[in-house]
Length: 362
Image 1 (cartoon, rainbow, N blue to C red):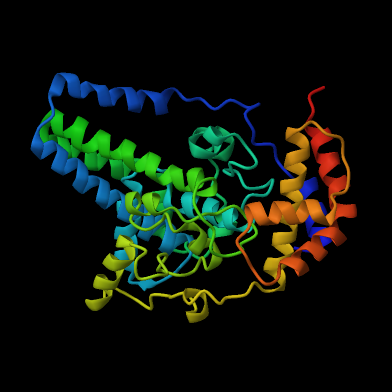
Image 2 (image 1 turned 180 degrees about the vertical axis):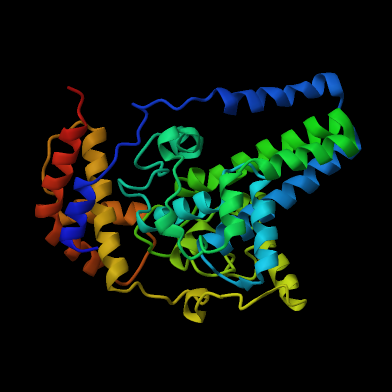
């Protein structure tokens, strides 16, 4: 991102902090409804159903919403494309085009002011689920997902986002009764919600960074298990278009394993892999990524000033180096990143100050 782009981004930022309160009632009602298990009982068959539906929905989110529609990391037929979209939408995370378009924007602006669910830019809970239930984020950016709007069946699903979960709920109720609906259906839905949301929140706060990505994405093995591979989040931000997110042999990625099995039967094909040098840990960031990393250092410094309620000032190289050591993985380009951040500081910091002033009430 060049200087003009940075100034334009700062000028066009939309506030998405907690000053505009989302309506949480439907979201909270879903969670309260899980307590109906007190009256329906909890049976072993319901728990197995819960696990099965969780895995089905999570695969829809990871392989469908994320790796296929947002990143096109593999190819498939038009029929299985629709099946993936339908399975993904049983997770009730809105329409497939909405999900994918928002996620593409997340990668464009990850952990910057225009990232709608960055815990570095908003509160943790807004990044976790507040942005999802906030009405101002409910519109679909059709321009950002134009490669899939040419399929009328996907547009139809997008316009009927809750039809798949409703149909699934009816089927579960017919075959498993009320306990199956509450324990198998509702519990798995809530679990899928929060496991997915943790990638937006926790995976940008807790874990380790292997690659310089210009943001705070982190690898978290526990989240990787819970989300069928999505927890290798720093890996993913280093090479977003890979169908495989666990780069090392020991980085468990169940969604990729399932995709690889599907490829044996010709259901999916052309699974994209990360470059060998990235897997071997010798990948070096290019100029564009170094530029983004320099902006990240300045933003982290600005956040520190805001938290300490200090006045604006240009950071020293030593201060930027301390932030880089704390927030970035080791890399041979650190001095070049620091030099670029120092060059940008005199222009970037006033723009940040103007942005902070514009946000002040009154």
